[in-house]
Length: 216
Image 1 (tube, rainbow, N blue to C red):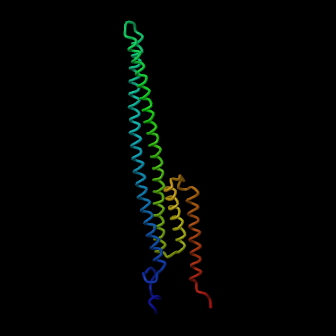
Image 2 (spheres, one colour):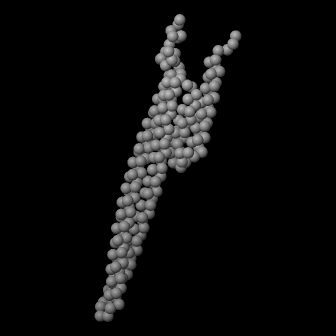
Image 3 (cartoon, rainbow, N blue to C red):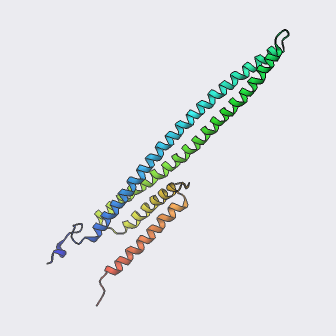
């Protein structure tokens, strides 16, 4: 009996199926690690943007407090300008000056509020991307588990499910990379998963036909 005939499934020599599945697991692990790393970076960016939004909001609050203080002083100056026996021209000038200062402070406060809103929007977008990258990473981990089960059980039909889950995760990662906004169970990732499953099943059946012995 030859060496090839007595080799058990899963050994290195001549076991092409095990080698291919092992390569698939390595690729999926690499993709999962990359998706997880990018997802962590997106989460850090979201936290940074949220901190910037809080700083801008605090600056806006301080500016509005300054605006209120100027309004109080302007009201006192208007009251003083109406009193007899005082330098009314001086107090009217004070009223005019406070009015100009209030306008400048108001614009500054509104600018800080706009900055805060922009930082909040950026934070929300980065947090959404973080969720997409995380879902993509989880999908690759599930695909790795399915590939390991495929390798141990030697059930080639499990590769169909493995490919579907992996394609689902890769599609989510692609949308995250291009800043698109599909939810995890929208049509595009599901279509990609079904397409990958059908393609894998086609190759599996083709390989079975090629390897089947032909009758003489």
